[in-house]
Amino acid sequence: MQNTMQRSSSKVRSIAISGIIAALYVAVAMLVAPFGFTQIQFRVAEMFNHLIAFNKKYIVPIVLGVFITNLFSPLGWYDLVFGVGQTVISLVAVILISRYIKGETARMIATMLVFTFTMSIIAFELHLAFQLPFLLTWFTCAVGEFVVLLAGIPIMKALNKRLKFKELI
Image 1 (cartoon, one colour):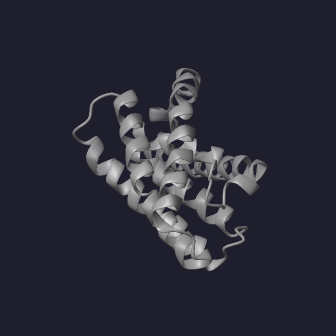
Image 2 (cartoon, rainbow, N blue to C red):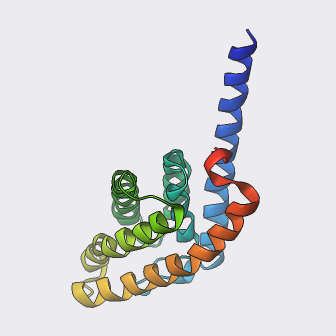
């Protein structure tokens, strides 16, 4: 009986933490919204992608945060398909790659590289929506993603010391 209550309490805690993370993603993304939906993207909330380096369970709140944020995108359904799709593909790739990478910092570097590379999906989306040049758009989106995720590494490391991301969810 007590084990059942502990598991139930743990699930409620996990759901609550996931909701908080998704809400934080949305709030941070909306603070810089004009820079999160264009060909030059600095979506600061993308640093939450580094949570995947600590625990694969963070995939749900990250994807949920991206989905909710993209509901407000001026690109409409494009961002719901391509933006959320890029996040899912990237996070799954990082989870698979992380099996072979030891240490959170190395995993965050892998996250940064995977997300930077897969910005090609976002560049394709922007090419379809606005007929922007694909390679130039990929470059500008990739640079923005790289900068945000690079800056996010020390921030997430500092937060992890206090919050213990591995055990949080």
